[in-house]
Image 1: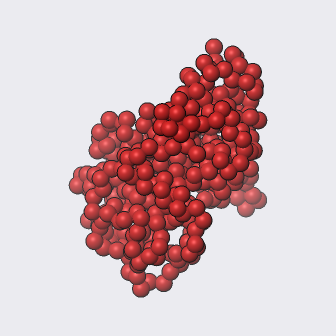
Image 2: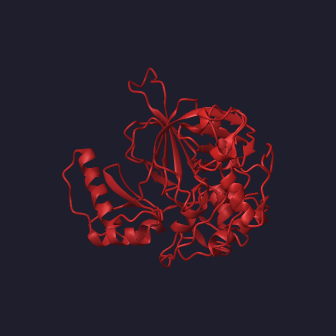
Image 3: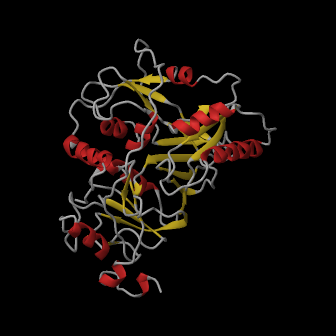
Length: 399
């Protein structure tokens, strides 16, 4: 029997709360108990940065919009393009990530060797704003855990000049469940939506915080102290939510008790677009391959700590599947290139069919965009403290 059969809509027993896998109950949704909180992920060692960089003398372009794509052909496999921004002295990765629709970890992994606290005046920071669409049904929401990214597919009506319907695709970075509280893979659907949700921390989360010397109340009302943020969407996976957050620096990290969290501005936009009943697919694909204009791109992410698959073998299988999907005869791909992309795991799609691939030249030629980060960013101190604890391996406590 599930929890929703043993509790009323507004009252949960401690026994039921203690066994649920993720967020606490949210008032206004039709599901049972929910829970959420903050955790941490130990930082991994990264290789040194590439020597070649974009030319600082090139004219700066306006940043491309990467949150929402319209008029996308249904068979499109690659979205966006890689960009680079030259940091100012006061910029941090937390600020850069949020400004350019990225999560903290994906920005860090794309820029190995760059100081996340003080990149330095004039340092080029690569923006991994090019995304390979996972090989999954393009219907509703697809969440890829290793890339920590959400894609929402919605069909558009065909116009008079267009025979086939196109897609709109929304793309957002996400925070996911930390090790030991992993976000599950599987297929679900959105079952309810709530504005200004009320958080009922389950017994297990309250016990965890009590041990840390940070006791939680039994009920957290809507407002700035609520870790669910201002919007929440329930899933048919009992105990899990897609929701906002009052600690945006946690987006792009493994910091929750299993729920999926978004930047406040992203969850608000997604909340308006996504109807109840929307399918949700949660997948675990650290290696992605996709075609654009006859070129095959390979994108490799840091796998989840629990993942013991051989990434090189997985990359070879993913490339083979891409050739099969395109109905093309497979051609050899440089094994040294695959080995390097697997080793570096930068999360940036790289072309792999060139007979003499040059990763440094490819990166040095990316689109250089204006630094649009405001000189004064609200909440910087709290955000930096959260990231410092994550990097240093200290407990990250819920508000």
